[in-house]
Length: 259
Image 1 (cartoon, rainbow, N blue to C red):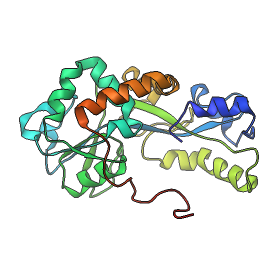
Image 2 (image 1 turned 60 degrees about the vertical axis):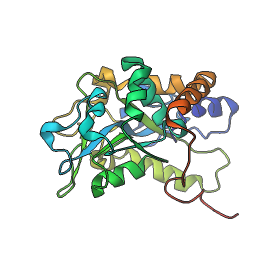
Image 3 (image 1 turned 90 degrees about the horizontal axis):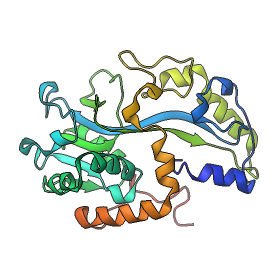
Image 4 (image 1 turned 180 degrees about the vertical axis):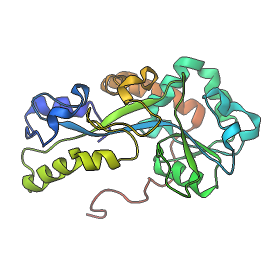
């Protein structure tokens, strides 16, 4: 789950089952609870992506400021930042460029959608040229049109997605098997972004995620834990991007809709 701040609270409340899967000792110390109450299972990162046919590598946006280029007007899609974890990415950008950046960005006729998968799908399909606030493959598969922008100096956000087993889980053995599968070297090596394991090398051309200071690796949890700050910032963003609207991504509600 992306609500990283919940896991320490759940541990304190005693509702998590301590468990250390195989490979737990190899997980980066920042990505796990030392008692095994929870562990990171993969590293995700939100930044900018673009379609190579619609933008081209030579004109690819390298910074948030590049998204203000008039040539991109009407060609950008973004997750509603006031509806998702993308909220933190927008805070990092606004801390760097100020609120005027957001005013000018919103004036680019941005297509605002719910969830981070929709922007990625639109860019890959070519119905949008650029997306802000989603991830992408560090090493694109053959035939893929999407490219992920890893900023050299601009801020982006990265975090270890956390997983845990509820103490009263109906099928704890299956949950343990799942965590062992996620932390296996094979699965970690196959993941399209970064591994949480220190003994799994990153994709060619990249460094371990903890070696990117502009990834703000530790900032997301602290941001999410300050609920007053989160709600204040969410309301400020709404003044610029409007109220959240549209169908939730991926278009269905929960594991058992209608129940």
